[in-house]
Image 1: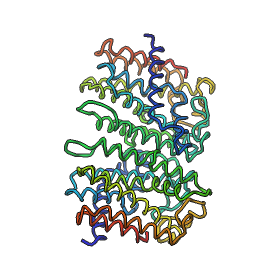
Image 2: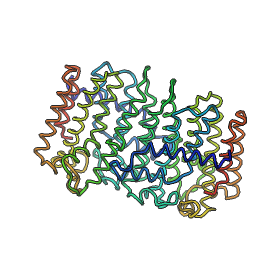
Image 3: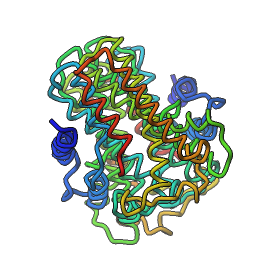
Image 4: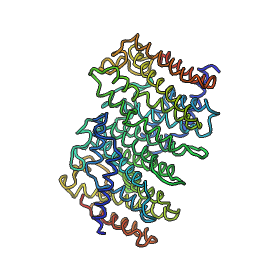
Length: 294
Length: 294
């Protein structure tokens, strides 16, 4: 199957599950449920849950119940976007081509909708159908650590804010990007494999793949902020420079940043060699992310 | 043992565990870790975790690992206070006698510190030491639902904000209070009992106790906001009326509110009858909460 067809199929199925797992829009508190559905269902590439599904598929036909895991990851990702966009953080008005959650529903609802999606993610994880021995606890630990303050997403968000307007070293920059974007992408791949019962060495290999891909993904994001247009990306571009954000183009220049991302993706794909053809889709996704325009 | 001594002992032990489970203050991101520790360790009655420990003690000597559960509950409670105090929500400057988290560390750090505490709670829950059959998944589901938007804490917070300046019926008011305060208190009691291996009927009984106590607790809170002073409570009083909040004194009057809380606590204690002396401490705590001045 052509990659874009495969991705579109994944997305359609994921959207069905997300719709099912979100609280109904007609149920009180209305504003909150609408805000949650608006932010989750308003587009998005679903890269993280797709990586999770494809990492599981390296080992076996994805077992029933993995949809819950994939959706929990997307809920976590969406919560982080909603809070990131808040006036006190990145103060963004546009996301996925539409007004951000707080622009549409107000700041209080946006803060609570983010909290609610994070909570829903863990609730859905604890509800996963899965035959024993159950990896519930391991998966929840894994994702909570990827979100958390010790090298996880929240640590990256905080370091990113603190770096605004300051000079950062290449090393600090890498740590910020590994936290704010890399940790959840790595965990998406790892938990998919865990769910499918991957052995230790395979898990290690996929961790390396996920970590490199996650870093490359954020570098490409930095590059797109300079190169692309707001209309094309669906979010305000050229904001990084205006805010004095720590980015790869700012520290390494545009050309070198692009080369670095390319090299990381190549190395990430090399990590998958022992899986042979079974990891073809993961490799294709990695290369696709490198060339994405939006 | 006298109740106040018992509570003080619980608090001292809980504070040790909380200190241990929080990220170190010297570890980056410094601001975030300091904000988390500031908010969790800056006082607090630890009512919810104590209720959890005492609910377990009805059934057996609290098993190793229950400290993690109790601390996770306190992390969830503290995250909710931090986000509640934000300018977009209740806009409070004072909490437990000190500046609120966003006053001290800024709004961005406060939002992320709340997110991080909520995440840490689930991570700690997934790490609980406990012999099989493990109630991990059931406990995580229980707490996530108590936090969530379907009758849980976040639903109550949202309904509370939406009710500002509006007339609410006695029934709507009760639903708000059961959500914003009752759900987590009920879940504290229930998960303690679940952890200790309580049977179905006992769990039902403790649920009723917890639900009534939780509602009574918020009614007393409403009354204290009218009756007490900022100095005594450690948070700004007389704010409910100024904000046009939906409160029991506003809807039912001060005297009747106090009577309602008393009646709920009495009924809650009656629910515990079949446990005999084993539930004495829970009953004492319930009566103590009715008379608390802070």
